[in-house]
Image 1 (cartoon, rainbow, N blue to C red):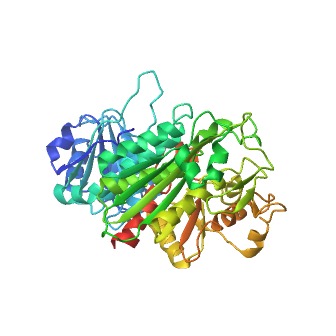
Image 2: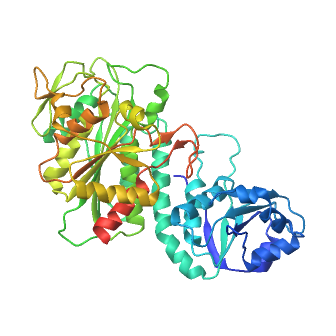
Image 3: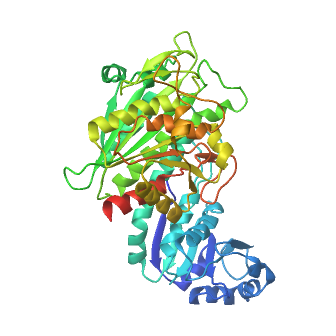
Length: 489
């Protein structure tokens, strides 16, 4: 997998800053105030920093913004990068400032003069999250970002704060790598093997193959997979870091490693993006990795349904009726509404086996969600206000956009089928909501549940604050914080 940039924390040394040949990063407050080592850099550069800090260009910078002075005279650095960041800045603004460093990080690395800044660990977190590039299939020369050293007043304390952040960063990178992988490499079998490898981190990993899925009655999941030469898998990952016997929080992910739409085939234009239709499973996998790496004091189970949706002579047809593990029958109106069929069986399986304290499912489920909320927010649906509010609080704290959407009987009634208990798709109106209503039919009364439609946030066509274009890893940070708040608090 892609490896996060190496970051170390050392005691503040003026000599190290003056002789560093890479990029030197200086942090300035709103009034242009800088630390003692930064003031020495200003003297060595004949006042270049002071001139910039008193200029209109600095005045126009917003908190967390960065500017760069290239090849300054008087020091060895190739550039001085200036971050505008008050000591009183909140964590998200500090991470934004760090992300600006990560985005511009080159092979020569960086020396960050954090000195006594109280948000040094948050700056490092943002830097690490942004310094990502998926290079697995480039055959030319690939330039990896160099090491980063933070000069701080108390390196041991800052490093301790950064430890949990490093674990979550690795989880985010794992999610991004999975989501960016092409479908000829990341088949359901390959995906399952990558998750099995996480047993070395202390996760209990179990892989359910087709014969066992048939015995369990997971016919809706198997129906999606039946047109593909690549067999399905369901992977169960358990992290048992909490009290023995306590029911776990359950995370469930849709893992359609490629989605042609099946017999209801998609248009050719843009179909290449369907390599990312396993984004929900990718997020669950990244969260489980992060929990294991930071030794979370919580019981969490992550389950992903891994299939490929292809059209062939054995593929599921529009008009077919399948029986779910729950026992309900479903008329398949559109084979491109396959993610909910995968999740239906997995949701029921999780409840039957683990009786979780709550469930969160994630899926790149509907184009309707993108129409409704664009790429700024994930759609959030829930049957439990307390659980949902805890999630929304965590999302806000992590700066990951999330917006609660409605559920209701009128929407659910649209799922009525003439020949079966329900149909898998309704009309265009409220498509993301009726999809959530479909999933809610597989949630037992009394089980707190959240459905996250990440169709608009799992992958982007342009850079975001913490990620280059492509997979974002949206949700790993929020769900890790939710686990902290609900299970470890």
